[in-house]
Length: 212
Image (cartoon, rainbow, N blue to C red; front, side):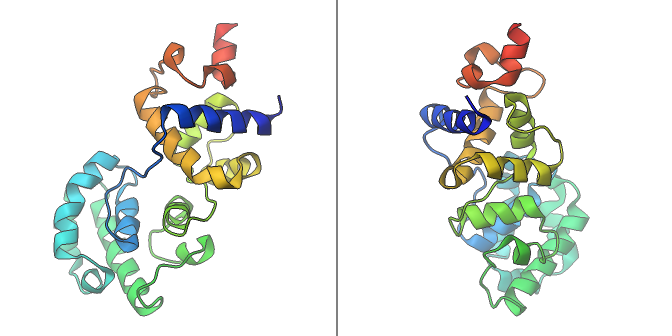
């Protein structure tokens, strides 16, 4: 079995255990998803989902957030870590989305990464979830688990993204990443993976090496 064939098999196996491939961040609009994703850096999705209701109640769109005092945003997001840098980025991205992009999020990685605080992970999530284009969100779960599976061999997010783009069917890439995140939380847990319970063990390089 080639690596590309194994990637397709892994996609199929994940579909069985995780039929609902959805983003774990709560957001009602594309801009809110952009904000939530920026907040999720070095922070759990669960924590972000506790923070965003009050944030979005006060600043529901880029129009309100663009006029916010950075110190006020800091107070609302204080518990998510790196809150000063994130608050500055949120107000900056709101102003750019309002003033440069006229309230419409860009639909390419190149344009999205021009926004303050937006890296490739965030940009890929917007491209995939909002615009339904093939994208690979190389977050910590995806990097760790695809290395274990033997699909990738790097800890660098961009390298992992590019390696997976060569292996995954384009139409499967978005859902693959969401399912890997779910799998990482439920079964392939960092430092204590439940290998015997894993739906991917028949296609996992780590499992076979451990068995030997």
